[in-house]
Image (tube, rainbow, N blue to C red):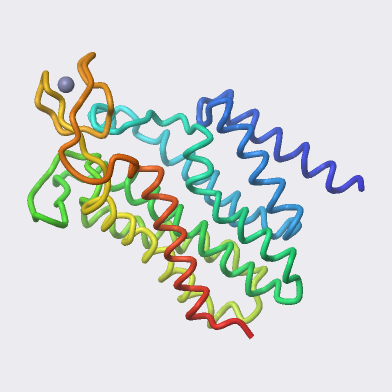
Length: 263
Ligand SMILES: [Zn+2]
């Protein structure tokens, strides 16, 4: 009884510090406690490892060289402070996996691998966009292929692509102590984290909502720019960056589920 209580206090403390250091909004902090507690309740301490690796590294990397990323603020829909939608876009799948793990507790290793993959995806995507934005060369849109402004969804840089592999590896390696047959499964997790980030880019290119500012003519993900409503130029109305994040992690995890072929 006392240990779960201590862990809940521990998770809440981290959420509070993240709120104070402006990594999370108040809704983001509350939903982080919900995600952390769900994972802990299902997987115990090992479950908090992939979550913690993702959360700590992506929060730090978002703060890193902030002034050089300032120009992206004009394109991105939201600031660096994560709200509950962003937290659930990155952590919602892990809550679902935690529920499956409780229902089907005989195969904990299998569900833990999927949990790790879901955070490897989230981390690969975050590292790719944060580190990729420091690239000296402009990103290239996948289709139609052309150089675009930094922060544009669906575009890639060489630096960002390497960063996504590193981000996936970081979560996979750090979590591998808790995985049986980790040597065989590790490359698989790293690959699927990368595939998640790749799906994110594809969806960002083809389906994500893009807007245009009627005042300054800039392409943006914002609904309001230069004090006026923007108009949609591409993609589905509801497909913002959070929806793309959620779907890419979901799809990569589901593909991994079928390939791993449980039992
Ligand atoms: Zn504008």
